[in-house]
Length: 330
Image 1 (tube, rainbow, N blue to C red):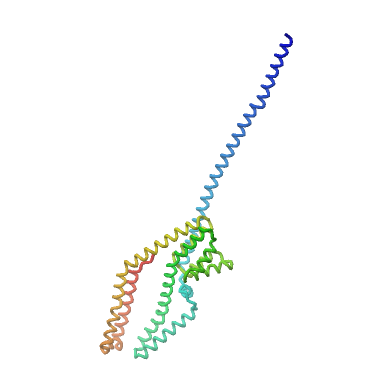
Image 2 (image 1 turned 135 degrees about the vertical axis):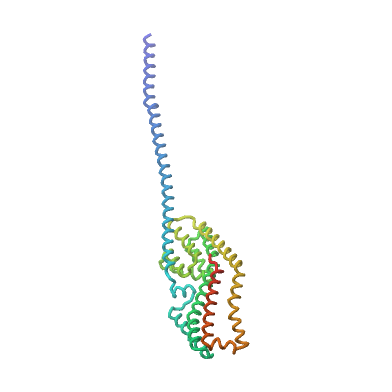
């Protein structure tokens, strides 16, 4: 009986000790585990919240940076528009190597030649002087403007293809500078020489934005202005350059198609204005050749000279108005 009670006491003591151990080991462990889980979950939520906040901040800061860049570019372009284009810049835009002094010397030579021809043909000195001044000032500037417009049209015609070269190069993994070098080597004039100047300026340390600005001064086209804005924004804020330039190429091609459509629709008006403007000088030339004594009074008499001067003035004014009416710039 004493042994049985001793065994029963030992079993109860063992159960009590095991229960106390389970309380300190198992129950406390669950509480610690719950606390750790709560702590980890709260830290994870905080981290996720921080990630969301940081991504939003990055998006807002990028948007603000893009807006600031566009604002700076717009202000700079307004300042550039207010400035008058100098003669040196016009000669450079025409792709000529003349100097302003050489241009003025050529203007003087043209005026002297016209004055000599008119005096040699027996025209009055007043009319000869007026025609020589008009020819000396107007003819060289007309030639310079014609060369400028022709060069800009060639550049605009090939510029979209050059952007496509950059898009394909960037998609294939080439850096932007390498794509610009490919355009400088393989594109026809005037696109190739202009990009060659840009690449050479970068090789001597000129920033891309500054090089593009100088390029725009040499070739003041809206297409090149769009290209400059895209590269400037991408350089400052990042982004998918290939996608942005691909969209720009599509826009430039759409503008080209619209321009050609407008030219086709206005071709009839242009032909009519050319016929109307050329009829009076043509009729006067025919009458002068057939009956010179009939037209001689217009050159020898004072009233005839005044009538010719007035007719030329009104003809020039009419041609100017018609050219503005049928000229569409997009």
